Image (cartoon, rainbow, N blue to C red; front, side, top):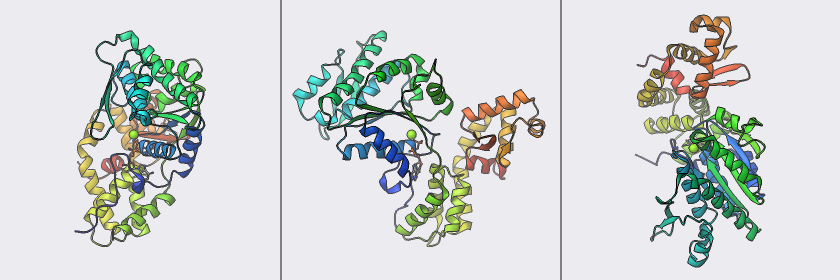
Length: 381
Ligand SMILES: Nc1ncnc2c1ncn2[C@@H]1O[C@H](COP(=O)(O)OP(=O)(O)O)[C@@H](O)[C@H]1O
Ligand SMILES: [Mg+2]
C-alpha cells in the first residue's frame, strides 16, 4: 500500500488539512490584534475549532499573546473558572512561564492561589486547579481576577496584543446564565483585550447575542456566522490532496463526495477518506458510492440512536426532509404527511433545528446531515 491517507475528519485539522476560510481568518486576525470582541456561530462539524486554532497560531506568530479554551467538558461554574484559568496561564501568560519570579508575581493576583501542574519535560501547563478550598460563591471573584490578568497583560505591553478564544461558550449559559452575565460585566471594561466567543448551539448563542434584556453577549462584539465551505473551494482541495498522495480523483467524483456530504466539512473529508482508502490509483464515482455506503454503515449505530430518541412526529418530519428541501414547513401538504396541526408541525421543526438535525435558509428547510439523509432514504437498516 502507498502514501498515507491525505484526508482527516473527526477532530480539528492542522494547516495541511485546512482549506479556504481566508476571509474569516482575516476577520479574526483583525479583531484579535485590536482588542475587539467577536462572536462566532456555527453548527458542529463545520470547522469552528480548526479555524480558531489557526487564528490563535497566526495571532501568536505576529507577536500576540493568545490562547484557546473549550468549555465543552465543563459542568459547573467552578469548572468554567478553572478551564479559563488554565487557558490564561497556558495561553496569553504562557511566555512568562519559564521565569519563575515573574510567573508567581502574576499568579498572586488570584487570591485563591491556584495549584499549577507543569510537565517537567515539556514545560507545558498540564493542569490548573482551584483546590477544595474554593467556596461555591467564590467563583465569581476568581473569574474576575482571571479576566483582570488579561487586562493587566494588555496594559503592561501594548506591543503584544492579548486575546483569548472561548470555544463552546454556550456551555457557560447552559450551566448558569449568570456566568454569561458576569462575563458581560467583565468584558465591558477590558480595554485592549480581545475575546472571541464561539458556540455551536445556534438558538442559545442567538439568545445571548440578540436579546437586549437577557443577552449576555448583547452588544459585546460583532457576529460571524461560519457557513459550509463552498463546492468551488472544496473540490480543488480534494483533488489536490488525492494527487499529493499519488491517486487521481476526477472533479466529478469530488463533486459527488461534496454532494453526498451536503457540504459539511467534516463529512466531506470523511467520505473522501474512505473513498481514498478503498481505491487503487483512480477514485471513481462508483467507488465514491461505495464509500458512502461504507460511511453510513460505520455510523449506523449513531443514526439509530439519534432517530430513536425523536418523537414519532419528529421522525415523520425528518424523513420528509430527507427526501428533499421543504418550503413552508407548516403548509397543508406537510401537515398531512406529519399528521398533526400547524402548531405541532412547527414545534417538531423547531425541535429538529435545536437538535441540529434540520436547518433552514429563509423559509426552506433541509435535513442538516447528508449522510443521515442517505440512511433514511436508502435501503439501510
Ligand atoms: N478549513 C477546513 N478545510 C477542510 N476541512 C475542514 C476545515 N475545517 C474543518 N474541516 C473538517 O471538519 C472536521 C471538524 O472540524 P472542527 O474544527 O473540529 O469542527 P467544529 O469545531 O466546528 O465541530 C475536521 O476534522 C475536518 O474534517
Ligand atoms: Mg469544535
